[in-house]
Length: 503
Image (cartoon, rainbow, N blue to C red):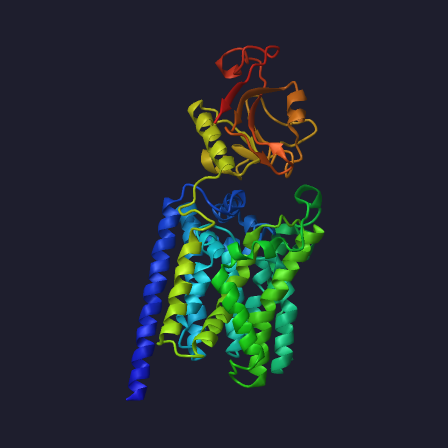
């Protein structure tokens, strides 16, 4: 009789997990469809820039910045457009929550559903799941490698982990922890699998780069400190509530305390040590590494909170253990246990919209780019070759960013921006990407007599961007012999009166 009751309880829990997962899936997918903007910003459409055209230009599968393994996965969804790539992340996010739930259920945790809930409902993770960014896939890979390890599939775990740097470069900082866990398990022979991902991509990418060590030699995160700067060591600590959410943090720490005191003893001392290393120590190491990198200004870090979402799926296991630790002091069916779960659910729902808006609107910078692109299409300038700096330009104009006859990112020569540009071609400069990533101040464009300023877009109210510069978009055309007519765009070179748009 007791066995039948336990089985029925497990069946109901499984049904609840599927219903909850479908609810998250439908909710997040709806947000994707309804959102005019994306939380991922310009990086989001740059990743799409690679995945959408990778099959047409196979070398894009081996771009270090774009993350080769992520590009491969996203390219399978890219035929459905940018929305398709974002739906891929929705699927991975919900899948991560379900993996957390299944692991906890195998651990005989009666509150295993909280693993799914804590994972997907973490405030920053929830909104990032609606983007096309790499962190969601990175979190899925780390969680899967962790669960495989704790279920004693050591070879598969290490093999999967070896490819993590090709989705999130900083994943390499977790290799020593998995090595330590292998030593604790007495399985050091699997050390030979750690270079697997590096060897596979080095060999396959060799054909396109002509360099077996391209993974090392083309590391993109160097020399950007002057652009992005650095900040406080506690930068991410101060934003932790907005990243992880208060319940996840509290219960994860409770779970840590419970494991350290032996309240979650599983398969003996080795199993406890491995779980402490992978579920509790790995998030600490990852968090500390990113905090240090931002503090010291290393590796081109911009101090973006989203990088921390990689560890949220793994932390959801610890948080579910934490809430179980508190509730089993009494009983989950008595009023203290029920009250704690209801209060936790209430806070989780509240924090989903406390700091982030759903659906996601265009931010003020992207909105101005959108307006500028609409104007260019209306005036039929978008049919010309476009030199751009903000990646949303290619996206909103609907042009192939890899076709050299249609577009080019950045002008060929920042010191002489008109050089190498044909008559009638367009330069779309903005004060965020132009002087920073592009290395092109507006003064260089204005001093070039071969370029005509035809339109300036400025936001109303004004705001500043990276480098503390007032944001604006300036559109130039390369002068031609007929610039006095309609195609010349302005009355004369001497009475250069650009149209200003206060948006």
